[in-house]
Image (cartoon, rainbow, N blue to C red):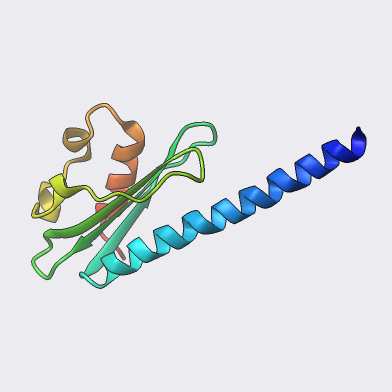
Length: 118
């Protein structure tokens, strides 16, 4: 019985590593595509037991959003998705509390993504 429990724990741990690697590969491919579009701003919300959010925006030379991706979720099955409603907006017009009125995690990630870099 103990050996079966240890084998099960080991198998689930290896599956988590494999699925985590798979998710990271999908994110990296999407992020590389954004980097080809222009300057990229990235923001990430925190939270241990809440869905984390990673938001990346690509800006063109006029500081307008030309590409985006949002990765949110608790599991390794979360996929990066574009946010087409932000495309074409100028950086100064991006207001996290207006764009995501009910989602504090997305507000936090967007605030970090549009913050001026030093």
